[in-house]
Image (cartoon, rainbow, N blue to C red; front, top):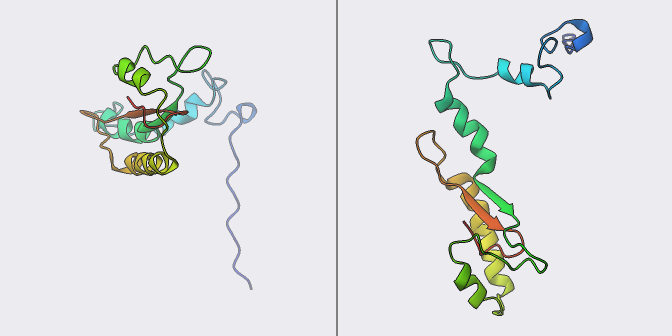
Length: 131
């Protein structure tokens, strides 16, 4: 006879009284998410193990930094004056391609630890402007 696959486990639903039911189940599955948290020997949430896992996708983000009608107001950026002075300068495609390649590499190479992390934000329109 041919080998058989084990029957799939039924998914819990609030109506079936499974793990997802009760208080907090309607808030985007928070109850199920809490079940998977790493715990210390004392039974508390292990933040040192949880932090890198949660922050992994936040290491490099592309955001819209420029404000105003023409998206060129970088007044919140530390180097606002230098950005304004270079506003008319043409940046070559090769430079932008190289910057994007470097940013992709940073997603896996920058340190993310509970005690210290390096997070980068780059402008969507001008990726060579970062924080």
